[in-house]
Image (cartoon, rainbow, N blue to C red):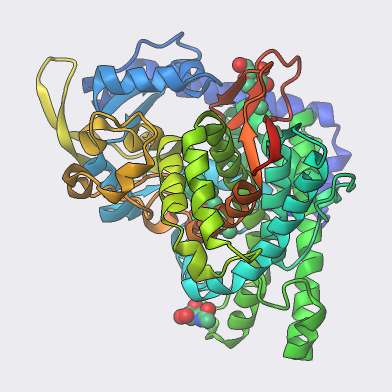
Length: 561
Ligand code: HEM
Ligand SMILES: *[C@@H]1O[C@H](CO)[C@@H](O)[C@H](O)[C@H]1NC(C)=O
Ligand SMILES: *[C@@H]1O[C@H](CO)[C@@H](O)[C@H](O)[C@H]1NC(C)=O
């Protein structure tokens, strides 16, 4: 991410920024005109599909689709059009919206090489997160996935449990301090995100950023990681429509120089954040490299004693053949990638469980009863004991089904393809369609939310929170062969780019929830109403807050008896 000062950059800096910006504007204007011309006059095979009427030609249906309160729009889409629809994007652009299980199976498994994130998205991700799993594709991505899959194995996850409990207990202690004199309102999201960040920091990078005490001053890295997602969210327009054009020009070094000269505040902030994260990653990398060359004992004074994900990866990397070795920059890239991918997702899942159980005291009591029995006479549980908590497991699955932290993901067709459908659709001409012809470069939005709530798969009570359903799943869900890596759910996606950390994240959720629900009772504050926004990763806010950023989730916490 941090490119050394190059001669190109120096010569670029000598030109006036205004001149460069004007040239860019002209370039973009020309590109856009060409793009609109193409869109307005060409017909698309997706025209056969029904879909919602766009808000305007300029914005298409994007404000509805990605609005903070888009939940109803998505529910209605499923009801009106079935398992797939055509959506208008900006300037007449067409999207395929799909959650049909058979079509998803083709996209993520059967025909996975024909569907990757769009090159623009990948390049932009790479610009901010480096050469990790989220920002690479094709052979590089496959090679990384091959080296990283064993790092996330069950055997390694088992070893993480004591460290997870050690960190979880700091959170427990902070809460105990707060509520020792009676019920208190606590921003549960701020604590769950600090905890999730510290969990991935220690067990992922072997580093610590936060002592998890009430008055701790956040480490700059922790602050940066927290800001990055907010900033990336605010810079959507630039990221989606401006950066992709810029990304096509010149070399990586030139693009980097251009980024530095672009007078757009959010982009500059995102760049500073990613630089800071990168510099920290390099420091961590160098320390580990030294420990490896000094021999295994050198890890003794490291945070996770060399058992964190990156150390496991680096130790293995010294032993593998040349073709399989990951270069330094790809290992460094995994650090920002893991931090980014692991923190807000897991913290949203933990916070949402506590929010939901605040409204379902019956479920909360039942979880607590299971924990009281399992934790009788002990403060922590082992890997096997955690996995034996059947009811907590069902609660987590049901939560991740109904409220996936990542509600949708985007792909692009790299080839012309035909997608089969499990249930026919009615086309605009009134005829039944059994498959969809998807031309190369079609943008596709895979909807996780609607697949997880499809009544054809889950039954008529699909929209209800029922942990009991997991002990007796209907045949329709197993028959549908949803391509998700986890539990017939799309929550962690499926196939070659599915969430590599899903077991890790399950374990984090269960460890943190087991500690908190054992000791504390959670309920909704009487004077505040909470709303979960449909952001890229869902985020809660208090209705009526003047500035609802950063997101927060106030809940009433008291000692459980
Ligand atoms: C509840 C928590 C989590 C959810 C819902 C979640 C969900 C997802 C989803 C939907 C993707 C696919 C993204 C895409 O294709 O655009 C993904 C990818 C990924 N996740 Fe997670 N994730 C969670 C936790 C974690 C954790 C704890 C880690 C790391 C330790 C992690 C690491 C990753 C990585 C590295 C990728 C990229 C994989 C690849 O491209 O090969 N995730 N996650
Ligand atoms: C080390 O890497 C190789 C190839 O990438 C893989 O086959 C092996 O399982 C890995 N071993 C461990 C312990 O991670
Ligand atoms: C949630 O949505 C509201 C608009 O409905 C917006 O003002 C607020 O900034 C959003 N908050 C978060 C945390 O996304």
